[in-house]
Length: 332
Ligand SMILES: Cc1ncc(C[n+]2csc(CCOP(=O)(O)OP(=O)(O)O)c2C)c(N)n1
Ligand code: SF4
Image 1 (cartoon, rainbow, N blue to C red):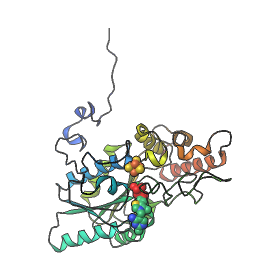
Image 2 (image 1 turned 60 degrees about the horizontal axis):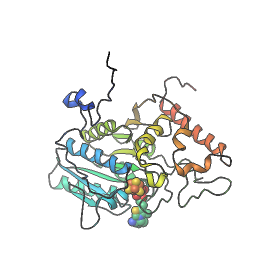
Image 3 (image 1 turned 30 degrees about the vertical axis):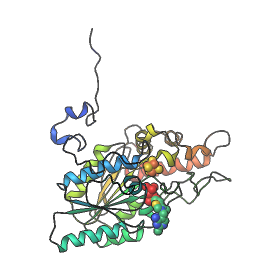
Image 4 (image 1 turned 180 degrees about the horizontal axis):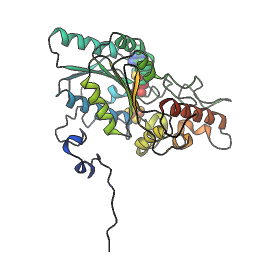
């Protein structure tokens, strides 16, 4: 009897890496990886932010031969990794204020320059609240001066560390502690959220990219590319948060993938203000498939649901697909 053919996804932890040449394998596949964000931290089960940060920082460590310093805004990533007097970080790591991480990163880069340590590179990282709201002025300044820092925003679309309050990256209609699911237009009604990647592009900095924890190889590659460049660089990573999104902890990667496949979250790269590559949608799906597994959107469904709000979310996703050319056959 013929054995059934098995297909393996290349680049995975299991058999997949053995199907790739050594130079194509993921950073995490290597026993030489730095484990810069080590195990034992206190993130929730299924935390997309912990996963994204682990891959991103280890990739930055490999790209710099370990000559890396990180500044970190207040937020979940800082809190779950450093319960005093412990730390999960295995690199020089500085906790900044909630709103000044970009400026602290700039200062570290300037200090390295003055000391002649040009090989020591800097990343600054924070959540979407620390990035799109309170830290926005410092970040825009860092971009405008073209400071030699890679800023990584882990976007879980709300202020999770303090109990799921709305940020300016919270999507339209999402329920948070400050945008309750009540009234004729329940959930966040402020608009579609602030689009930081496009604002970063408007500064014409050397490199802007988006990524998700659904494609960790892509995330690593973008970090490595960013670290091969100098000047201000910005990486925006969508990181589902089971606690804040009301999703199952085992759905983190599936939701990140659905965010891409619906067009809700376009994945692309841009250099000096121009889009240079996009990740095409392989199986386009309606936004309902992405929204339904998340309790923060539960009020949109059912007998008392809000089809008109769903239609707006679909229209925004369709606009992303057109704007970034995410599906080849879309012309209008
Ligand atoms: C000036 C200031 N205001 C408020 C806070 C309280 N605070 C700490 S973390 C946080 C929310 C962080 O949200 P975000 O940046 O989105 O990161 P997440 O926790 O979601 O990863 C807030 C409001 C603070 N530390 N400093
Ligand atoms: S609240 Fe969300 S972002 Fe924070 S540790 Fe839990 S899953 Fe991660």
